[in-house]
Image 1 (cartoon, rainbow, N blue to C red):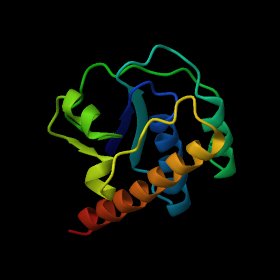
Image 2 (cartoon, rainbow, N blue to C red):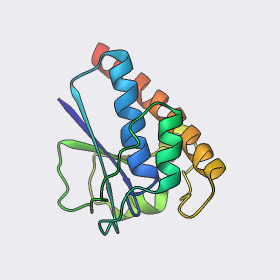
Image 3 (cartoon, helix red, strand yellow):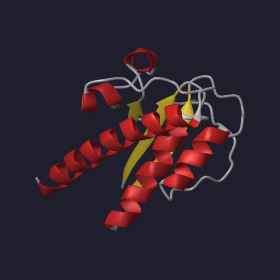
Length: 142
C-alpha cells in the first residue's frame, strides 16, 4: 500500500483540499491501495476553512468538517507532497516532493481569501493530482 500525505501550513485549506480531491480521483479510477492523508506544519485544531468546503462540494468531494492535524513524526514509508518549496525545506525526509516539482509552481495559501481564490487553488491542486496519478500508474507498470 502506498501512503501519501499532503502538507501545508495550517491543514485548513490546501492540504485538506488536496487530500479530499485525491481521494475522489482515486475512487473514480477504482484505485483502493493508496492511503491519503493531510497535515499542517502549524496546525492547531482549527476546522477546515468555509471556502475550502464550498469549493470541495463544487467538485463533489467531501466538504465535511474536521479539525486540522499537525505534522508530527515523519514516516519513511509515506510520500509527502508539500504545497511550497519553503514547506519542503522544513519537512526532513527523502520521501518528499513539492507541487512545484509536479507542475512548475507552488500553491499559494488562500487562507482568508474569497471563493474564487480557493477555486484557483483547487484547480492548481487538481492539475498536480493528475500528474501525480499519471506518475504512480507508470511506476506500477514497471
